[in-house]
Image 1 (cartoon, rainbow, N blue to C red):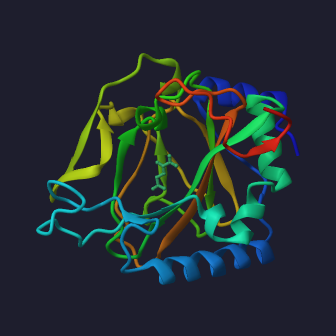
Image 2 (cartoon, rainbow, N blue to C red):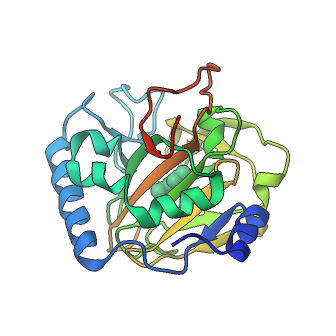
Length: 254
Ligand SMILES: O=C(O)CCC(=O)C(=O)O
């Protein structure tokens, strides 16, 4: 289902949209959760095989004295490891939303699973996605899918509405109470402007790559599993100025 013109206008003004209709049916959600858990279980304890803990606090991610008690676990390119996640890239309800916002020629920038375990799930400080990516033109959109109910208690998404239309903030290396977070960036924001975006499992939000957002630590008894797919209009250039013609074309053409 394409977005209505009102929804597109809302996205253009606010930089994000809480999609009001369910995108992932219950049986599909069960399958995604099962494969998600299996992959995280398989990769737990490995290093250099696609699983990262973004919440490591220390001088570097390799620093042996770093604090690893918080976990903001990430697997990038889930689709390369698992057929169910490869198929998710072509899920019509998701691509319809992307097409409504970036047009008919859609490539995958990348996807990622972002898992905050119960009780010790780490934070993701305020940032713009393009603060990491430096893509041009900066027209990428991300669909962030809740695989569990995600809210203020377990590290759901918070946003600064309209921030994608403002001048770009500086991003510095993030610092938490436990020290430097070598894997993460951080921008200064006026938190009085922040708005939570609670989502039920199977629902999603879409955000612009310049819209500032953040997630809190998960101190609840509930885990927070999320999956995000980053879409780009064909022809987008990476931070080195190269057209990414080797990335998957999900709909339309290069
Ligand atoms: O899932 C999270 O906690 C952070 C998500 C995020 O920053 C993103 O999708 O760009």
